[in-house]
Image (cartoon, rainbow, N blue to C red; front, side, top):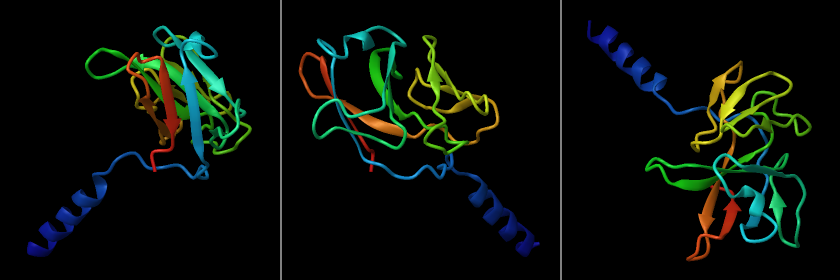
Length: 153
């Protein structure tokens, strides 16, 4: 009986985990977002922008590009989230997700739909068991008009 309980405890411990990471290769991310000028189209709930090439010297755009989204945080305030454009199920640089203005993004290849408006990047429909790769977004100005997007690790 003790052996059975020990095995059950080990199985329970191993089954409780976060989302797994897909095998999308690590790539540097560093973007400056300025809501007053070149990124003013991001202002407004669920507005989004795909950035696939560096716009200035020093910018890095991840593996397949970066999707920046104006979303909602846990307290109901608007904030910004960023994800790699690569579908984590397909894990191919040329297959990128397509965002809509309702806080969702869809892979055109596998059809998986992801939540992008609340910061999770979690799959909500479809075959992917992996969330989108998320990047850190921080405000760099007191006015909240300038933001920086970077790798979490």
